[in-house]
Amino acid sequence: MTQLDVRPQVGDTVSGVAEGDVRGKGLGKGSVGLVGSAVIGISTVAPVYCLTSTLGSTAGEVGLQMPAVFLAGFLPMLLVAFAYRELNKAVPDCGTSFTWTVKAFGPRVGWMCGWGLVIATIIVLSNLAGVATSYFWLLAGEITNNPSISALDDNKLVHIATCLTLIAAATAISYRGMTATKGVQYALVGLQLAVLGLFVAMAFQKASAGSFDTGLDFSWQWMNPFAVESMAAFTAGLSLSIFMYWGWDACLATNEETTGSAKTPGRASMIAMVVLVGSYLATGIAAQMAVGSGTSGLGLGNPETSDNVFAALAGPVMGPLLGILLFVAVLASATASLQTTFIPVARTVLAMSTYEALPSSYAKVHPRFKTPGRATVMAGVATGVFYTVMTLVSENVLTDTIFALGLMICFYYSLTAFACAWYFRGELRRSARDLFFKGVFPVLGGLLLATVFLKTLLDMWNPSYGSGSTVLGVGSVFVIGVGLLALGLVIMFVTERRSPAFFRGQVLTKSTPALVVED
Image (tube, rainbow, N blue to C red; front, top):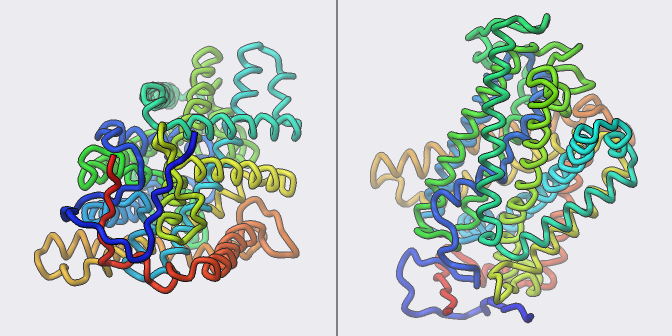
C-alpha cells in the first residue's frame, strides 16, 4: 500500500487556518484521550524497567541519599515539563523539541536538539530490548525450573538474536499504530504498577520484621541531597535519576493525534510525572529499609547485582511464587515501553523530514494506519544495529549507554526549556503566570540540566565513570556520549548540503503557519 507524502513545499501558503490549529502531517487525529496519553507517558518511561536497571546503580553512587536524588532528578523534569506544556499550547506539533527550538533559536540549534532526542531514544530502545531479552530467558528458566534455560541469556549470539526479534516485533506493532494495542498498553501499565505496589508492601513488611541483617530504619536524612559525599557522586546519581524520568514527553509527541491537542498532552504529562515520582520514592525507600544500600549481599549497592536489582530481590522479598510476578512485571514494562518508545522518535523524524531537515522519504505516512511508517522502520533498524555493535564491542554496554543517555537527555531537554523562555520572551511581562511558567521555571529547569550536562561531561572523561571500560585510555561513556553528538554534527552538515532551504531559514520559522491536511 502506498504511503502519503505530506511534505510541504517552500512557499506553500495555507488559508482558513484558525490560530492554534495543529500542523497536520497525515497522522490519525483524535485517536488518543487524556488517560491514553498519560498511559503512553508512563509506559514509555517504564517505571519497573527503570527501577531494576538503575536503583542499584544510584544507590552505589549516592548510598542512603538515593531517595533524595530521586527527588532532585524530579525537580528539573517538573520545571521542564512546564516549558513543554506552554510550548505545546502555542505550537502543538509532533516534532516537539525539534520544532520548538528551530522556531526559537534557528535551524542548526533545532536540528541538533532533534538529533539529541532521536539518538537518546535509540539508546533507550536498545536498553529496553536488552532488559526484555534478559528477563525473557530468566522468566523462562523460573517457569521451567531449569537454570540452563536462564543461562541461554549469557550466550551472546542467543541474546542478540532474541533482542533483534523483540525489536522487530515492536517495530511492526508500532508501524500499525497506537490504537491497535491500546487495551494491551492499559493492561501492561496496570500490571507493572500493581506488582510494584505489591513489592513495596512486602518490602515494608520484611523491613518491619527485620528479615534481613542489612535492613535499616527509615531516616529523614535520606531525603537530604546535601549529605551526598561528593559533587561527582551526586552528579552521577542525578544523571541516573534523570534517566529514570525520561520518556514522559512521549505524551507531547502524540499531540497531533490527541483530542484537545493544545491542552490534553500537557495535562497527561503532569499526571505521568506524579505517578512516576510517587512510584520511585515508595520503591526506593521500601527497598532501602528492607535490604539497605550496602555493597555486599542483598545490599542495593552490590556491584554484582546493581544492574538488575529485582532479579536479586524478587525471591527474598516476595518469595519464589510471587517473585515470578516481579519478573513478569519487568518483562511487561520493558516490552510495553519498547513499543511506545517508537512514538517520539518516529514522529520527530517525521517532522524533521516534513520541514526538509531530513530526506523526504521519512515524511511519508501510511494511509491506513496513519503512522510514520518509514521513520518507524528506520528507528527499529538503527536500534538493532546500535545494540548489536555495542554488545559485541563492550560487555558493559547496558551500564555505559545508560550513563551516556543521561547526557543526551540533559542536552535536548535543557535546549527545549531555554527555547520556551526565548520563544515567549515578548509575553513574560503580561502576567505573573506568564513570567513564571513561560520564563522563570523553564530557565531554572534548563540551567539545572545544563549544569548536570557540563559536570557529567567532565566526569565521564575519567575511565572509572560508568562501568570502568576505556577506549584508548578515555572512559567509554565519554566516547559514546560525545561521539554520538559529534556524529549528529557530521550528519547535519551533510544534510545541509542536500537540503539548504531548511538551514537558510526558508521552511520553518516562528511565523510559519499551520498546515492542515484535509481528510
